Length: 407
Image (cartoon, rainbow, N blue to C red; front, side, top):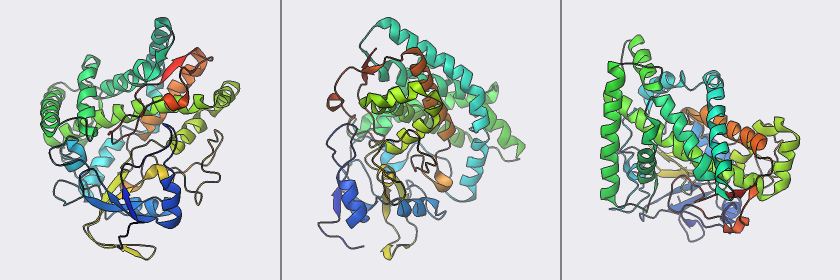
């Protein structure tokens, strides 16, 4: 892979505004679709920005996320935090082959659209309570803190059968795993150790006294198939679900509301036709320019030919999903936020055998929050100008620090 000054890009890329895409995306897609990324660690990898290239790589069953055994590019510097970004130390589940497919098949039985539909009334009641509490506290309010953060925590705690009162600990653990520069390596290791102990105790409790939660279901289903998941696999699954199931959705709720209120004609369009909520959520997911500055990683275990550019075995590839979602080759007028856009084959949840298992859950939570806000607070608006919104820096899943609103 040729490396010259034009193709060298330092991640994360800057953007002009908190909701704006980096201008560099368009140049890369047009002139340098296979670039070289330099990470905060100093390591380098290949960087993809085109929809077709990223979809092809994500759909290739030969390649998976880098594991601790791979010599993959590290995101965080040595001694820095973000343990999960460097070694995926919290993941003990199989990352490839038949073992991974079996694990996904077991877990996929729980995260179905049908089951999410059954959970919807409970989610709606939770969201209504949180929105009503925010309204009682008065305006202005931080929608992310009042609704965006607690709802996914309540939901994922319910799914795992974990006490919701532990949500502050979950928040700290998630942040320690997903933030590249806020914590030291020792702090991240300490968070990992505490989280590991917590989840080990929770799995033991589920084995002793099963409930209706996902861990109990995995224990039962794997026994039924004749080969139970190990405790380490169950612990890693619980940890992964708890981190991914609340941090990403909490940030996305805040960004969704900010994007829809940034131009209030969008909010008015939804008030006039609430049936657009589903397509609006998909369009917000596609248009999110702050999905994460480092993209989705794949580790190449053999050479990979990408339209004539050969990426050698041993390369770590960084797939910028948000950049792909703005590719004019895949989406007409990609920079327009079209709340009626359909079909909308965005790559926000990844693709192939490693696509996000919790995407039905995330979609349901986003739809529920939007429906409740439209119904309860139709006069909702941002309390600060869009340029004053601040991104969370250093987080591998992008978000806004606060989403100040009034009504």
